[in-house]
Amino acid sequence: MIPGLRYDFYTSNADDSEEKKTSTEFSPKFALQIRPIEQISIFGSWGKAFRAPNLNELFPTGTHFVIAGFGTNSFITNTELEPQTTITREVGMGLRFRSVITRNDQFKVKGARYWIKGQNFIDTEVINPSPPACFPPNCNGTTQSINVPSASLQGYEIEGSYESKYALFEAGYAEIDGQNNETEAPLGVLTPDKLTLHAAAKLPQYNSRLGWRLSYFDDFTNTTDVTLLRSGYYLSDVYAHWSASKDSFLSGLGITVGVDNLFDKKYSRIANNSPEPGRNYKATLRYSKSF
Image (cartoon, rainbow, N blue to C red; front, side, top):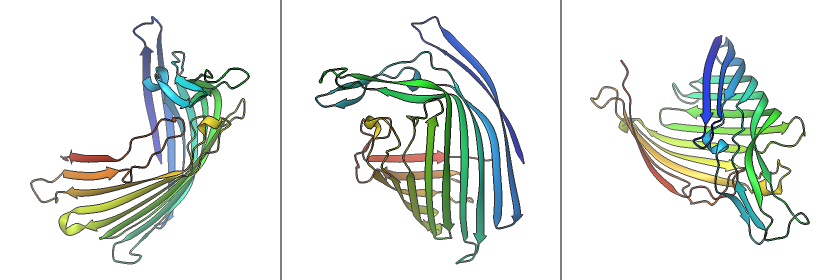
């Protein structure tokens, strides 16, 4: 049994405004896990959460999207945006088996279902007029963050993995749905169904790992706004990781190099029609020490 309590203090103000917003919130959480036998775990949780709007939600700027020959949709600010509070319930079950194929290997699978009730839920509202309300190319619209008085979300996640001394395989699938309880319209912050695959070759003699990740996002049609419809896409990442052995003087040091979006795929996320980053080369140096 894991009880928890979080305290948030939030204040927001703009230089060109005398208005200042302050809010405090206590967020309790309780989680329970039962393991009737070594291979099976059953878990559940209940928790309240608080999230203040961030700067991108309060003061977005620039163009959201352009429809050639029709008009431009631009972000606008919303200084009246209130913090959101949610209550989340989750239940699930996991299986774990050891020494399945080789000695000390491990196979795990876990599934969870969750339900979220939100008040003042921070959502995205896209307003784009069309004829006869306007005449192209002057059908310009706006996009801003708004508070939905009452919202509901629900979804599930399934993930599994197999790991041995020389290999690692992981797979996961996630799906989410949600609606504005007052209008029964889909929320604007929903994401498409997502499938992830991860495979890695482990080189224990060199304290290294070579890996590949594939993320597939399905077509997004869960919206009443045609500007938010998106075609499915996939992203492929590769990486190499090395860490110092525990008995060396460099113990705690880790280096990772990789390439995200290996095939330079062009794609857009759900609430943003502008293209996301293309091929990205990166390197990470980490060091940690325990006492």
